[in-house]
Image (cartoon, rainbow over all chains, first blue to last red; front, side, top):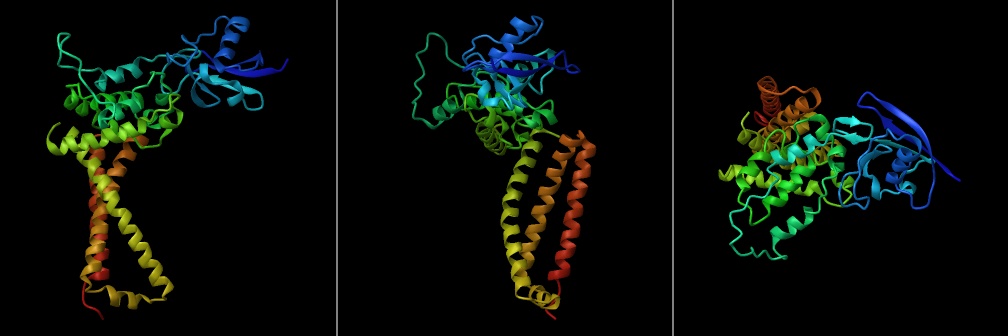
Length: 237
Length: 116
């Protein structure tokens, strides 16, 4: 049987790679490889997953230097000379092995005012938003984020500026800025302006290139930049 | 620096970038024309000195450079060297003022005075 040579990160930031031989199988995903290692080679290996079908966003890792969701990444797509190197996501503290601490990633969603603020109660009727409206189309373009952290790991600006909110939080802010029911627009635009907000994006497009859902946080961030400038000039923020 | 100032600096850098895009193209085309036509230094000065149009064009060019470069430099200082705050702001402002001063001095030298 063909064997895959796998190098997996062990320990924390100052750890190192450990090598394993894993039987190669048809339609094998990178998550299958990690699971095989934990179940057959070393049960102390730590990693994170839940749904295994690209919905939950739990299993993102760095595979051969590239941030990816491992449950939907086939080994045949990423193996180089039958070798695969698997490491934790970049730009996040490593808890152990392939598990990162996602706290700062989600804290930044809160800092970007990433939660909906409405003005109606359960007694009010449903808001009617046309699927054809400009705002709804913008929301549709960014709403399918699963919070996997791949974009955050791939972002150079996060590496340079640890306070930078990052592509996912800003993408979330952009969907809410375009939500016609939301009442927190001014506070949100104020939260994403400034040194660590949308204006810091260099448009490298790493997030857009790597997003497993095919979203373009870069486009949303560009929209936020225009909205922030317009709100500043008009005195809204 | 206040959030409002940060946003306005970003806007100034984007607008100055648009101006520079036009200025650089016109400048390069002019340079290529001058070289390919074999114009001497005195012939070029003969066309530029006292010419209000070229003076205005290069004055705008220098203004755009003086706005664009220090704002970008300030970002590089923050992201590459982790130098933020008032010291970095003052340094970038001094660089911008220096560019404006030396640039306008060059513009005056080339466009000031009357044709020989």
